[in-house]
Image (tube, rainbow, N blue to C red; front, side, top):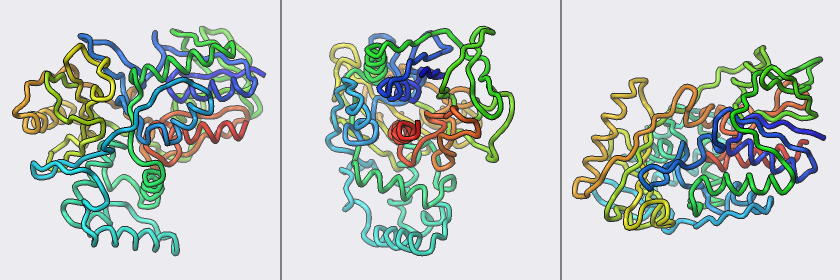
Length: 394
């Protein structure tokens, strides 16, 4: 049995390894000159800057991605964060625990959760947000902005509840030693042990379908036949490759801006997330060199900040983000290494959290994985959830 994987991003390479372990002969096609997509590193001035995702796995080695890597015997060291997180509120930093939020707000959340389970009456999270205290409301904005690049009016309570349950189950983040690229490199090496192939600069131009069944792919106008085809490009792009629409949903991408910041002295002094509550745009920060000093030149620190894009005016969004950073880091000697915006063909996620339509398509032997088809969890852990599902279905 032969399988073609379209896209050598995290989802594509995870799928390739799962299928290779099942005995499939794997060919991965990637149009870029490097593997990893928005989940790898590029060296800049000695700093390992990410192409997309932060050097952080939402639930560390305990979560779906950590479990999947272990199941596949992919050798990656993940250092779980300590503390898991802090909040910066009115210039005061506190460790993130359940006790930080007022008891009244927690009781309201549990009551809403129970009511949803009993009556299945759904609503957007913004409705709940309007009923809670200022601190909790601002934390909700920061959490969603940092982890999902969305706002409370973009996600249903039911979808947020599932993500909350995953967070309570698997807890907070971890940092892969070597950064995102270490995960990608390890996946490729593991795939090679099964004689799998990764072809760079090889763009898939078309998916061949006949009688509602995927038959193969076209690369440089040459058809290659496969028994199974996995697209890591999302459903929208899969439609384009097929040449016809099959979705009955208008899927929207999530957009954001990331800042890579060089410091001569650490700002966070820990490996967790700092959620920033009194800001106009910046939602959170992490300082990955506290876990792996090799992600920066000797003696330097790499701080990474993220914000969701709340308007389509990129310059305005960056202006507000830089203004936030100037206030937060006012007493620190820092340098902005890179400002990366993620939208259109290079978004944070091809589909906003809570809008995912699953891995299936109407075509036999064609599945979609990656950030355009996540399970109900945060970013790469959501990707891993649906890779587990793929493994169960094929």
